[in-house]
Length: 516
Image (cartoon, rainbow, N blue to C red; front, top):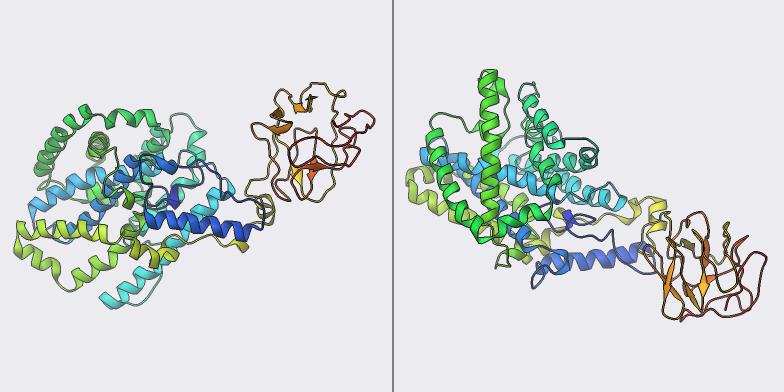
């Protein structure tokens, strides 16, 4: 899991938080962005907020994401002994029946507000694609050091957990497409089933991407009210019996079915199943997975716990536990687990959970954050994007939005009616030092204009763009309008508005308003 579920940074930029980017004021983007990145990194190192859903974080989601990563680490520690121990195989089947679908579903849920804005794409690149490439190289080095294989970085064949980063990158980029079609979950399920009948080259990453896609799309369709019933005590009461029944079913299935069915890495041909059996088992897995994901989420605490802070940084144990598992396997540690029997498996499970906690502590994050959550280099931002975000806001055009530049000149193609009074779409209607215009700019207090989408001046060069084709103003060093507007607003007198929001000076211009 990566940016989207596994890290705080992965879900920012319109996912769990609603802010659109770094909130800086004035100054250059490089300095303001660096300050904001530093503050964000400090929040990740210190953990989630101190109480409740502070700072846009939901303790329920943080708890769920960390518990799922713990299950990932446990599952990877069970994998080397599955074939030798039937009981472990049953537990493995139960685990993989729901924890990968739950990961994909939460990724989709945290991608609901992804629209492809530049800031969102930048975060996707820096917090999913870059860690993917970095850890592909890291796992290649582990293969060389531990298994004595030739060093080879193969991005098209993801290593270990890196397949999930590759899948998330594709899933999130396509999120806007699924909003554009009818019945997206049904269509994604058909794609998933069809993937099992297709020769995908024998690499596990692409089959998993396609076969788990319906869970991501289902997460895109969910809303907070859909998850709210799972937080009630009544839901927890039925969740435990459901999990117990599923454990019995997994015990029955262990000697009859391969673990490849739940790993979602093999198609019908690799599984050796006839088409009808393949469809039946996949549909049963869809249904069982939905029930088990709901049961798991019902068991997740909805309040803050001692591990909630680690949920904001779950990407660290997710990516870092692989080399440790490889080292234990290389030294024969899992052979000792098989020899030790059930007690050794329990001990390994406890150690795996402890490893997940250890890899998420602040000391580890302070050292490795440049690899796991690197900032996006300011010099790689587009020129227009850098100019638009200099004041910490995105450039744009919209009705009722004042767009100003900081060069001290400007024009306004639209009219402003009457001295002291007036109304009309896209026009400023001053009345007693205040401004009010339907759908445009509303003013309160002593004449300072505020309103939805209105850019209140603060610092030179606050925002650029146009305003409903009516007025384009410039702002002086204090962020207040200055200059004249062609056919629109003409200010005379001292030619500026005072810093407290009052209009200073008198004068008229053809078809304009005398500033009062």
